[in-house]
Amino acid sequence: TLGPLAMLAADPTVRLSVNSFDRATITPEGPGVISARWQPGVSTVTVQAAGDGGDWLLQRAPALLGLSDDVSSFQPMDPVVKGLWARFRGDRIPRTSTIWHDIAWTVVQQRVHRRDAARHWRRLVSGLGVSIPGVDHLKAPPEPDSIAKRHYSEFRQFGIDSRRSQALINAAQVASQIQSLVDRPIEEARPALRSIPGIGQWTVGCLSGFTWGDPDTVIVGDSGIPSLIAAVLVGERRASDERMLELLEAYRPHRYRVLKLAFASRTH
Image (cartoon, rainbow, N blue to C red; front, side, top):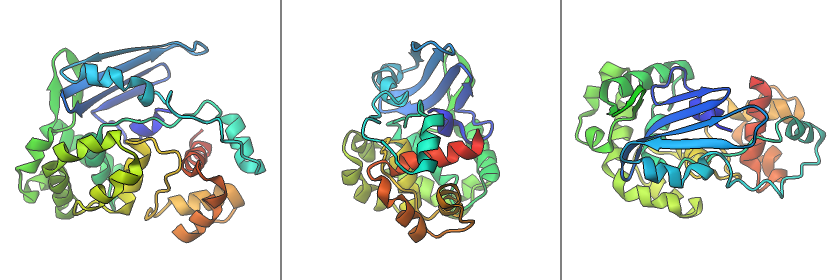
């Protein structure tokens, strides 16, 4: 469930192990850290939070842990997806609600290999991120105000090119306005997100999944996801966005859930 939030190697904002999860982030009330602890085979999860944004994070902890994700209507009949669901039946879609963190994290991943994105994100957070008193092992992303006032050339030191840098700046300048969107349906939020220069359909698709926890979102414009879906579902080696959408159509309103299962099948 929480694995996708820790997919960039050595991310300074998150730590995930077999029985713990910590994430430092930016909330409307300030920086904060959310921590979850559990034991294998035990259904209870202990959650704590620290920092100015701690209370805000605690209020949203159930959604972050996937407890708001309703899987009752997901009953796949296709043997492949049915088999994957049997293997990963406990998987849920987390909802972070941390829109600035998620935008910054996703923009850094635009049009680059994940390995390079991880390095750029590490440098950005290490250089400009926010330390939280009492938390030594994590840093929150830079505050949007810190990004909004900078020139795109300042991000070269972190390995971030001018196009991604400008998209970061554009998003930071409207971060306070778009934060309120997280409590509205993603369908209402998409036009506002797409109006930010540098925030295209791929980035909005990622935000739909991570920030809103939308079980039906489809991430288009990715170089690898269509082929992954085609390979897992029907054994085709390569596919376009159109072919991916065709293959996923039967799974509405759980298309993103099928995408998560496809990823899980390749990583476990």
